[in-house]
Image (cartoon, rainbow, N blue to C red):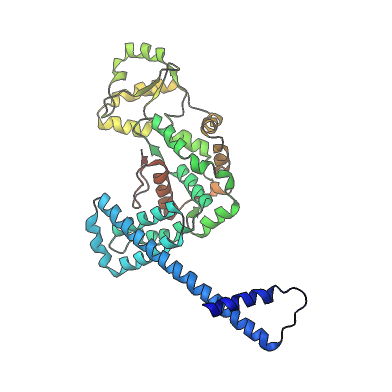
Length: 361
């Protein structure tokens, strides 16, 4: 109003006087009243704007939920919104959704709600999801990256063919690039929010290099000259038999280097597949091949990653630090970690009910 505009100008004049100015008690009271009126007007204006924005965000969130249910052919789950517990969870979801400005966090929040719809009865999974919906909006780039790195140490990735594993590691570059930003306070925060658990006993977690060498023992090996295979298959032609549903053999070739590597990344998983296919006879031959393809050293594993992105050096330093070798992710941390990795690499997140499986890409 015109009257409020006059008060605002008068207040500005009094607060920025030129020269000496004496204000008596009545003027002081009038000034305080004017300031409060101005502040109240501004407060009401900004609150109204925020309320309108919140309404838009809520509509956007509900629309995204329904679109995701339709896309994943889970429209039948909408009937579960009639339960009071689900409405309470939806309430928390909407609050967390409008409180974060991070687009990826908003996507995670919707994913958590969809997961929650799949659990009707009282269960531990529901309790974990209740915690996740409150933690995810409060994770920043550093804490999200930290959880992801710890996830890599606890879970295995199983690609359909080995060269996809390198692509997977390259897709993690956006978070690898911020590894140097992770500080002690980030570690303390995820501990405080129950995303981790302490490792008890005398022995800490093994180094990240050794974890990689164990989980990907067929991948982190020296390549072998193609001529060795030619000589070997002249004695054992069965070594070239198809070992998967794609009809391919167990070797990848590098035409540039004229060398060979395995199509599989883990011996144990590979041998299980062979047993299902009734091809156990190939296992002794593979073991013979492995003798000619020695595994990488720990230094060679680290160098491999640093050649992909120099910032992997900090990831190794971080995971091998005395603090993190005594920490592992809790179920809550694993759940959040698999969601982050899924978004970055377009892989299928692990089920909250079973984190003993590997990540399939």
